[in-house]
Length: 217
Image (cartoon, rainbow, N blue to C red; front, side):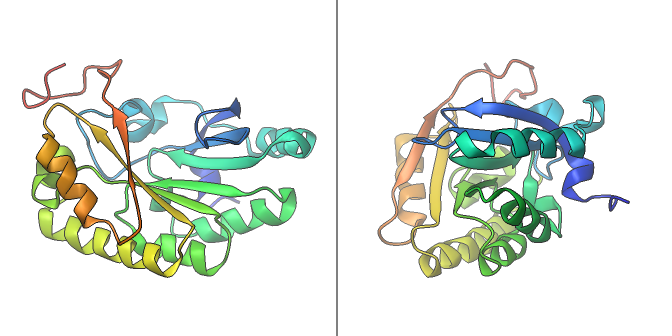
């Protein structure tokens, strides 16, 4: 029986083959519904905010697909929504790793460092990619009021410490939304641990108009 908030109970999407979610690798992508932030520029807002509006993906279908296709895949990407909302994520990833022997990439907003740390300590992820929304002072705006600046600073600080301890297993990216200036992006770069580069992503207007007046399309 699935736990109420276990990863299997949140699985809302399977992309059988992606060439862009893990650059340089052919990967399958699993999408976990739900997110604790409300970023006005979110491109997966239905998945993140109203996951119950999307059909569940059967664990049997995922397992059957991976059993058949793992041999030609270079990796498995876990994204969302926000995967780290599941406290037992490390156990779930461990099961996938043992069963299918695939490298695993985890996407995260960085607000649950305890869960990420358990994944790293359990050696069940090969790469953690953290989306840094902007300077911590702007987190209330950039997260739809869901993350205070102090909370963001504390959580990201722990993520940066983990990145320093697990060199080679972290990457950081930032979407250049219209509200971020060149100086803001430079400030984000200075936040990162020594030796890490910031990957920037271009902003595209979301397909669903989930933004506010502060985020015009």
